Length: 268
Ligand SMILES: NC(=O)c1ccc[n+]([C@@H]2O[C@H](COP(=O)([O-])OP(=O)(O)OC[C@H]3O[C@@H](n4cnc5c(N)ncnc54)[C@H](OP(=O)(O)O)[C@@H]3O)[C@@H](O)[C@H]2O)c1
Image (cartoon, rainbow, N blue to C red; front, side, top):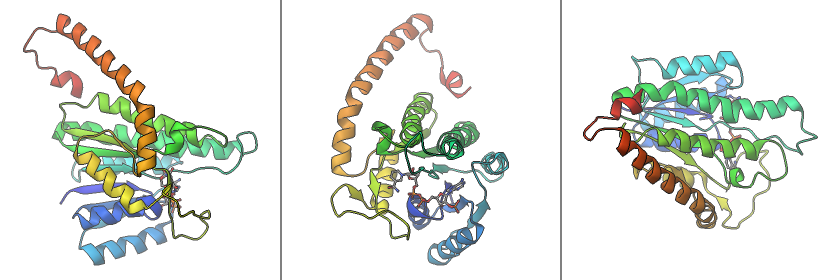
């Protein structure tokens, strides 16, 4: 059975990932702070899908929590085939009003944890020649407008995923950024939700993301409206990247003799 580790796998979008992956036969490692809620979710997956589910209670904004999850990801005896960096936080309020510790928490969870967990798992995936990483970004990453540091952290997730993806061709490992707009939620405490096409079903977002990952894409945008806007915004960047690659390849061809195996350089 392949194994997937999902951060924030006990609620919202992370729970939707866990559900779909368990239904696909993945064994799960679920990470979040609230152990009781994790145990409840884990019991449901074991019962409904017959998969094995590990519960890893950890606060990813704390060094000890981060190290515990890194250790699990680097445990060679229990390889993780798919990492879903889903846990994320958004502070309410304007940048100048939000407590600086809350801004720091956005960076710690939305940026540092994503960087460190990806860095922990990818080398072993490259050695095995197989694996995948899903980084949950947000449409807010394109619109870092008013508010806290949230949009900026999600812009980082998008750029980071592109950076990692650029090092992976030929390794068998894939990375994708999921870029949802507003997600519907049945959980109490969530903001009032509209009925327009701008409100997305989390399960649909997950299905689309995993299908895009299987197609080898590096960006998944659920919802027609969001997809159209993101495709337009991405066009200049993709054109620039293609040109840079063509120029780079020209230089490479001059430097590297024909027939040289460059795989080790990519993996190293
Ligand atoms: N909701 C939206 O409309 C929307 C739109 C675009 C993108 N996103 C992104 O989608 C992802 C999931 O959002 P969501 O709305 O589904 O979240 P959510 O319903 O608030 O659930 C968050 C999950 O992350 C866990 N978590 C929170 N802080 C954590 C920490 N410090 N360490 C470990 N686990 C932690 C929570 O469990 P515990 O509380 O037990 O730790 C929970 O399982 C986020 O990255 C978010 O930025 C959401």
